[in-house]
Image 1 (spheres, one colour):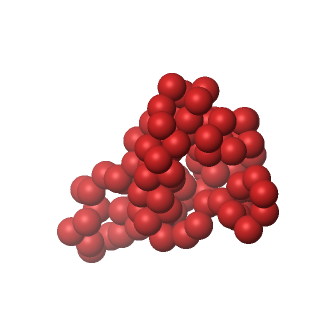
Image 2 (cartoon, helix red, strand yellow; image 1 turned 90 degrees about the horizontal axis):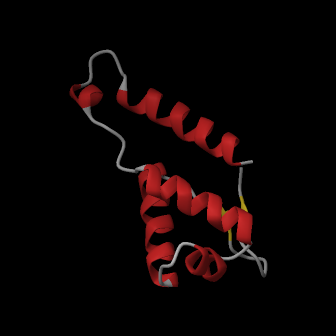
Image 3 (cartoon, rainbow, N blue to C red; image 1 turned 120 degrees about the horizontal axis):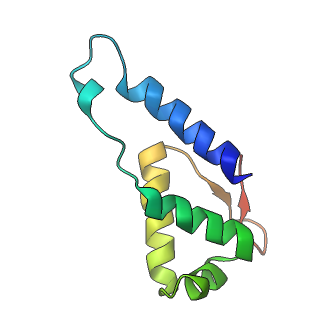
Amino acid sequence: MLFAIITKIQKKYSEKFTTKHSKKSNMKPKFDLDAIIILDAIDKHGSFAAAAEALYRVPSSITYAVQKLERCMGMSLFDRKKYRPTLTM
């Protein structure tokens, strides 16, 4: 599941940042390995709070990191309508 997310992120950014005549082609994505680790922990542990505990962080930092990545991607990564967050991809 996480591999599908990483692949989708790579595809989105390769389209966004490698346009032929764009000045933005030298820009780097605004997410890092930490965001991928957080996504993996949420997927593995089933909640933002459990992921925060596993990563020795406060839950608000996990929420902030996910929101930042979602803004960067321009899409929602988790379906939050259910009791447990589920990946949308």
